[in-house]
Image 1 (spheres, rainbow, N blue to C red):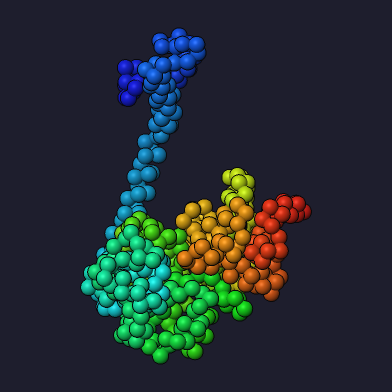
Image 2 (image 1 turned 90 degrees about the vertical axis):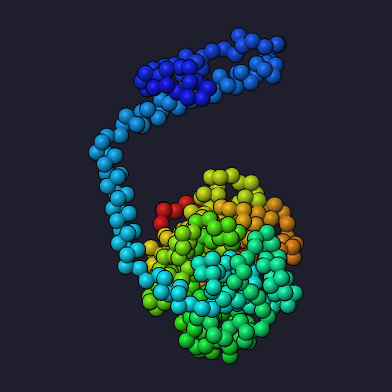
Length: 439
């Protein structure tokens, strides 16, 4: 074959000859290169040497590529084609029997309680799915609502993104909530009970609530599926949505997945059909406990991951820490009835990886700054959005005590947040725990 780029003048007849040529080329001593003076190259010689090095790299990589290609048999290729074709046939079959359009077509109005970034982003997805859908954001601050209506931007949380024209804002709960087909709850967990109690008279008991809030209520240790009916004073059709969904990437239309979980399987499917699009896959589940606990506890684990980053403990420590934290989430959630497949899925492992490893995470940012030496008071005082993991950490420890589960990493986070232990000391103490079997 004839390689391209910087080595296009070299004809490679086989992987073996490519490897041999690369080896010979790599043995060329740079001291014979024109332009060398006292062991250093001038600019032109340096560029030529760099181009030569790139050429050798292409030749060496050609060896690996040809080895890979020659190792593939026709049976291998046919298996790949057949497997993909089977997936495409399944896609076509489902599409031919789909009722997605009927759910979206029958939806006229959706309200979002809470004007934060996640609620705004999810509302934007709905508004894009249907251009004549009335999407109303219920805000607390009249100035924020007026600014959104005048500029079509959420200037406080997503100022660089223009919103669809069918999104509007109001501070009037009656205007926002009456006549809705669905209501999205995006109020922070610790404020939800009081908020819901204040607006319950405007919510039709038959209107489904779709909860985006993640966390455990301080004091009661309750999940949102328990807080919502308590705040409303009645049972309400409910689905919780959770998964790897940073608001800015949703606004950009980048692809991701989320889980809609409800004890009512038909409601979960309706939510799937409402939100599903080319940039958002929606999986359904009836494991509300698993989805909620994953979404709550991963925020605490993200603080721990941030602490590792802030202390500059390295990639090995980060991977080991997150793996331990995932196990701890599985231990407690399993005791509380969560299913293992939920914890291993999009709303479990998927959300954990996003929140622990990506700088956009608010909870991870709290941890990074703690590890770097800032106080919690300084950190929280400078943030304009809620890091739910801070409040949730204590509730996780209380639940662990109730269910007799030991959670070293998540408990250490609670201790650090309560200023009982410094981040470096917590790491040292965890590393000195007794060596145990993998569980």
